[in-house]
Length: 119
Image (cartoon, rainbow, N blue to C red; front, top):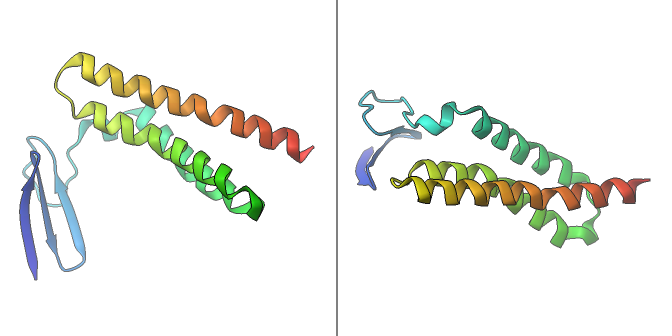
């Protein structure tokens, strides 16, 4: 069973359990055509989010607020890069990139605090 729809300029199609996303100007099924996915900074941001998720699994149970904040801040970095890339006006793009940078800086005190607590 398949379905298709147009969502904000991206065509999403699903057949069975396979979902493919067609980006701007890319018409090949199964190809993700978003340019931001090729950016090194985006790839590093995804790695950060993945590493934070893995590292926080070993945090003490009483630290759930810190874990939640750390995970959300780390995931906010690639999300804002992606959203900024989708904006048309350069000033809008820049604003989302600044937000991504801020989210990255938000992770620093958590890492520093946990490093000191582990000593």
